[in-house]
Image (cartoon, rainbow, N blue to C red; front, side):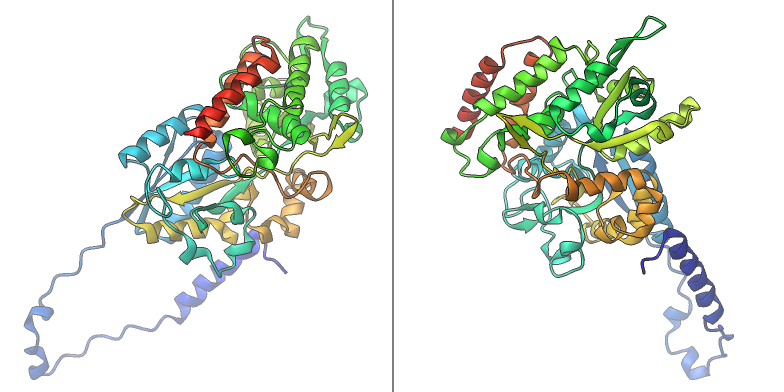
Length: 475
């Protein structure tokens, strides 16, 4: 039977008492014999040893600026330093939109943190590893630490964190597959049953019904989509409708060979998906107009301007914290349903169970790789993962994630986890893990800005995107 966090802490307390009570008594030092006293005079007069200098471990990330993630990492730091007083962990980061270019510059200059946080399943591993030469590039080969241990199979998505066939990342923080969160009170008022939203067309009809002018003259919208320079302007749309429809945004099934002639971004399915989303935003007008990044879009959800929002399980912690700031129990009004299936050419195609894990890697420039590994390994442990869960995230440790404790304490997030088994297609399909992945994604972010914000023609934008991608893949 798995231990709960309280049980774990209780056992730790008892062990501490037992160790204290069983410690050997220190007897007074006997007076040495004359011969012994003069045997090593230098040792007899040696001053007490100075405490060892603390080991500093730096960790940089793109999520530390977000309140629930900061809360989680501050708790992890505090607990690990309590267990390891010789270690000083320094946490820092930059907003998501700024982090990735900043990290590239740092790796090229050799100034990145000892531990680097990346998000799995989006091609970032190869992109950043390739910035340095060597079998595992910019990061330490973690095979000796992981292979043959419980972590090799016991952590969700661990098998995908590789470069050139070697583990370079550890799935030791949290993960999430996207779903649709909604305000239960607004659904009830509109007479909508969330259980009946099964396809993208069901979703659109619900969004239309939820879009209306309220009694105070302000507008309420059915859905909050990111419409800005933020990369979510493309990534949310691609998860929701594009990849299910096309089964491959960049290449067929996102598999090799990764050659110019294999680029499929401007095929019929990808363009159809673009047109469907553009119509939803600009013709059906179920999304509030304006340039909104993800933080602004979430705020519109919390203040009741929009009724539905695409997000991951971390949204539960965000909603809880924002509700406390507002003096409102927002979690009580929070519901969730699976990303709807996509109807394309008469076929119903389920969303892919994309697992967006937040993971960690050790820089090849790290001065203390073994100490860095010890901290990362502890984060993956039961204690570390329970702290992650307390902060509103879904743990990557499968035993913790599947425990009765987790299902009892976090039923909403547990429901999202169940979508992998009941609604989504597995295995997940992610962006190709190749060095060019970042450039390919940039092209589609720009195409999405043009099509969803300014109303540019989808086919024309995707034809241009295809030509640009082919040039990149031909280099």
